Length: 491
Image (spheres, one colour):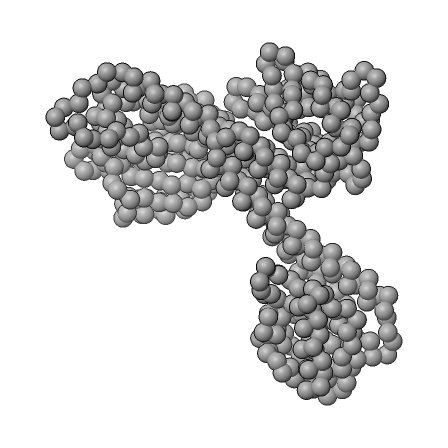
């Protein structure tokens, strides 16, 4: 698409540069000598360079020296073969620190069909990698704990096939892991009587969701008999099906250590719940991010965010305070699950720069304040007696202005932890991306309305043509270079 043909009264280059500077992704264009000829505002802000510091420099300035050969060989091979490369790229800032991005490179060509340079579009995925890292750390920690447990632990699928077991399970039976994992019923360590008893226990488990202190007799590899006490729970239970069982087994041949077994079972259940909770957190964050990025209504976005926080963070109040520039104060916009104390407090405007909310807005930084009633930054209306309150405040701040503050509070113990604050911050980041998208959409609609008001006489072969403005980065930059340097290759 050529913008100048669709809208001949537009300055094509100025329009495209304005668009590139409005998006949150990094956009960098280099010539055939790999010299940077354009970097948008987001690229400069993320890397710490000023435009005059980065334009004219070679592309390798944006990644570590030791990665140059790796990126060059991989990227330019794909670019010359297909005209496009996509993958993860580690970008280096001016201060030497790095961050990871999902990057796509396109080759563009001059009028003679020769490569003229590359267009790079990259999205910062620092938060996503952090959440993934925390999830895998939790999983590895859980595996380590399971392996170190004295109790035998195994996981079976819905058919009863053993898919995982710990070392204690192997020691108890005298088999190796390779001999246990993959075994289907009937198990070699159980006779037909105890196998039927176990199947009966699975029926109870499916019905009640748990099984405790279920006694069976197993036979070790050397044919010696042992009495075991078994506890089982459902690992993944969907609405209509069960995918796996988790069994915790203790040898109670000599002594019935009921209290120890119960404590071990509770510890395992807590660990299992922790893994489930983290998996739910990741899925909920993904769903809420997808939802808010596909809606432009502010109230809908705020409602989705407070609903998401309700699923992941135990609280007594969650909501958004929006900044009123006339009053120079913050007013409640969307509040959920209020207490009498918070409902009374919400009746008063919160001045900019005062209180925890106003301080967070001015500083632009997240504030985690447990026992906020004792925090010197807290402010309360005259005559109002402070109550116990744990507080998280995350500013909703754009490049040039403050929009509001996302607030989550709890009027009881336990105190908030850093992980909960990180979850709230991830919701705030999603809000700002959605609000920025909504703002750009409103500007585009306003611009289109202005364009349609201008008189325009199409030629005879244009009368039945519909005019659209594509929002694809590639389409915009294709029109830019087809007008100035040549053409893009289609991916």
